[in-house]
Amino acid sequence: MRVKQEEVIKMRMGMRMKKTLIILLKSLGVIAIIIGLFLAIVFIVNMISNKSEQGKIETYGQLVSVDGKNMNVMIQGKGDETVVLLPGYGTAAPALDFKPLVDELSPFYKVVVIEPFGYGLSDVTEKVRSTDNIVSEIHEALQSLNIDRYILMGHSIAGIYGLDYVNKYENEVSAFVGIDSSVPTQGGMDTQFPIKTIKLLQKSGFVRLIMKLSPDPYATLPFDDKTKEQMRFLALKNMNNTSTLNEMVNFYPNFKAAEKLSFPKDLPLILFVQANNTDVDKWIPLHEEQVKDSVHGKMIKLEGEHYLHHTQSKEIVENFRAFMEEIK
Image (cartoon, rainbow, N blue to C red; front, side, top):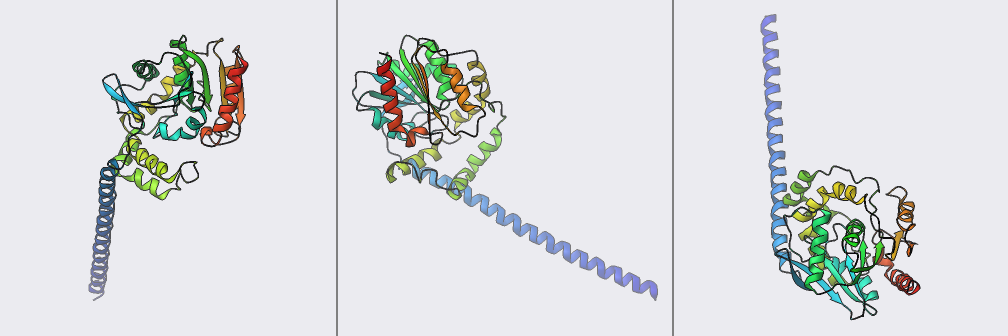
């Protein structure tokens, strides 16, 4: 009898375990279906939104042929001197982003905003985003516009490309202006970026979802609502495209190559630097080192975020113009 009782208990326990397992498997199946539906919805919404937004993007500037592709540039102002503006990495729509600065510069200069491949309304390219290629493409765009004498003004990573540019085309550049520009020896540029993961997030639609759930990066910027909307459309269009991802991959070799370069001593050089940068060690000393050997070199600290031209365009232009008057 006792043996039978034990067998019955074991049988009941086995049945309970089987039922529990079945319930668990069913629950996991439901969860898997929910996750699958969620992923499918995120993907489909992203596809539909991308297609819808493409038709809402408004053109601006003009296209010039560079290396068989179209590069977008915007020109404003009719001054005797020309200022060429180069964007920082990942700036979705440079011509729109630089608007506060362009508006301050254009009463005095002819202002040319370059949108490199992968930015703004320019085409993407499969060509390696080495400094050499980027610089030669920018130069070709200016040549197409018959612009052969100009002041080069660049934000962020344009400090690296600009350093190479002024050494290659020293006879064309009359001055270099940095807007919180990158320095070859700044730390952190050897980071290995998870490119495959970034691509997956982009294709799956999760980048759009993350942006939707994050605070609006354009909310406090000095642009009208229409411009902000266009910048959002272009950010979603251009974010993590072939060109910008390849540029990210080439950060380290591009910064490393720039370590061998310095600004020509006789080239007028003025650097506007974020006064309170806590992300990069020795940010101010790094820029002081860049200007110390220049015959006409100056560094000016400004309060604000990395995109100084969003809030300090008036101060930048006033100080820049005063600097150019001083060196005449």
